[in-house]
Image (cartoon, rainbow over all chains, first blue to last red; front, side, top):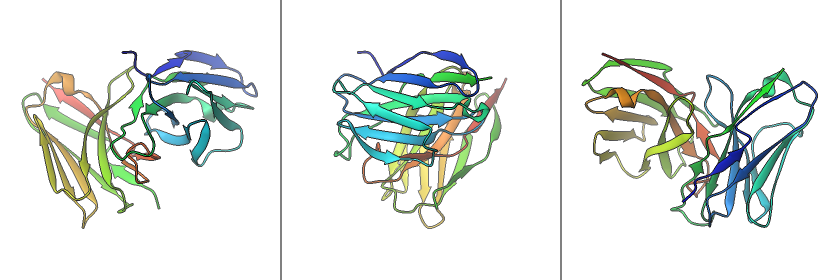
Length: 115
Length: 113
């Protein structure tokens, strides 16, 4: 079975541009979460979506937005990119947010470099 | 507040035991996690412990939890070169295991020959 897949794996953007990152969850998983991992730091929670609804949001500016589609895939959008947005963006999927035994599985991430 | 603290580096000789320590602030977490991240790879859940347990053993891994001191440790017995990675202590801030997960900064484990 395919794990969590993210695209693209790497990309370079210029300050002020906008970027869209994509995530396909494991088949059967209905919840998707996004994390930002700056070099040398641990991942920081950005968003969680379940059944296309936002269920949690971290301490990130409004330049960050996301959505989940009917097939449970998700996109993370970042507008007006800053140099500080350079990071590894990780997507995690899980089966059912309402179950205590659900585990989050992480993808390989998208490495975003803002120049 | 939400915070997880851990030391940044640890060097251990191959064959010795590695002990990685962590302190956390949110005592309401039902679970506490250890994740492993290898270069160029995503995050892998290594093991977890329920907050009502003191210890969990899984092959070469031993997790110890001291709830009073909010201290979590991961012991890797007979450390191998394949254990070289960054280890993150983490806790979900909700009832569910996949809820907003707070990660420490990670401990980089270096294996000496």
